Image (cartoon, rainbow, N blue to C red; front, top):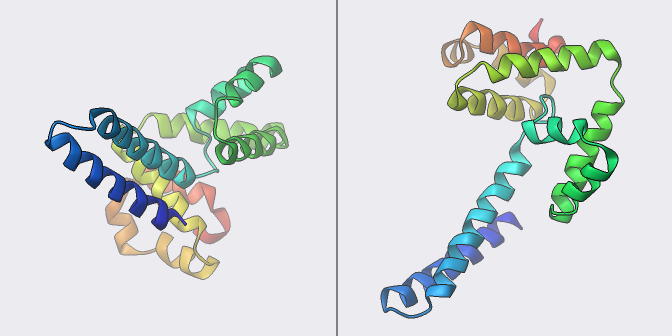
Length: 164
């Protein structure tokens, strides 16, 4: 489905850009660019790992219920469900689990933005692997070369069973 959406947007962009090149359809070209940007953001949102909350989820958690509801109204339905599920999981954590998650989040925030993305992508990739593959990846030479010691510790901390 995502591939079809991307293909549709790409086709729309080609048509819009052709019209814009001829001096026509400028509103269409602008709308096409906005649609492509929205699709890219939606794809990135789906790829965000769930083990370390994003800044947006942290902000939502600190809001009053009324403020949170108003902010969530602006999200597309699927993203809203994802955020609400994430908030619910966070609310179910014990105080020790929450403190550990907060510590991981603070550590992640000390990394450069590019390294934050790399760590988040690695977490997502590891999460989709069977345990045996995850364990092999966490102990691979490639993993050791791609990530600093602090990044490795953070990632392994999310998967303590596989890190042993």
